[in-house]
Image (cartoon, rainbow, N blue to C red; front, side, top):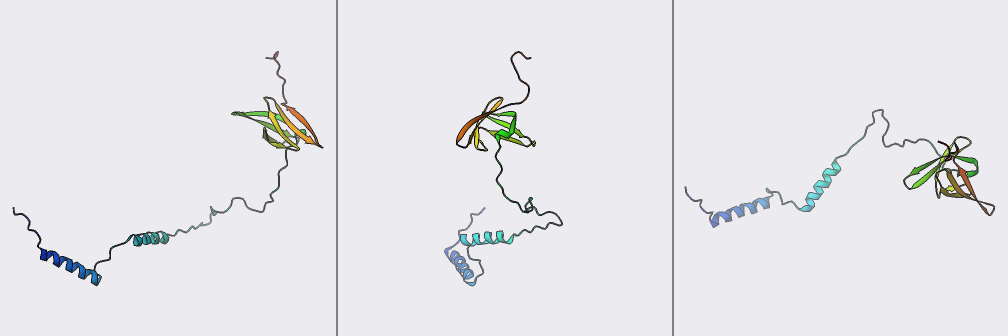
Length: 154
């Protein structure tokens, strides 16, 4: 086998001359720059458009709540008009279940506001609230209704 022949200087000059003429005539595309690449990427992103047609279905972007609503402040629980029906323990915190004469239930925890005061503490079977009326502060204790449990009962 013969060794490949090296390309002579005149051949290299001819190749460079042909490339220069091709560039001048516009036969070869100019080299791409980074700005051109980002323009093409942005153009491709803008060309993709999506349209939603419901075909007699509900619009998924429409609010589920229809109509006009008035935002009103809720009334605070009146401790004098409710009874303690249960105590819930959730981790380190206790919650009291209260029920008014109409059967509406309320769940409060220590520190929650009530009418004219706030809940001070919740025990295993009690709720203590501090109520201020006419400049006088009173402590009200609600006991859990139900069977009395004494040590003698089994």
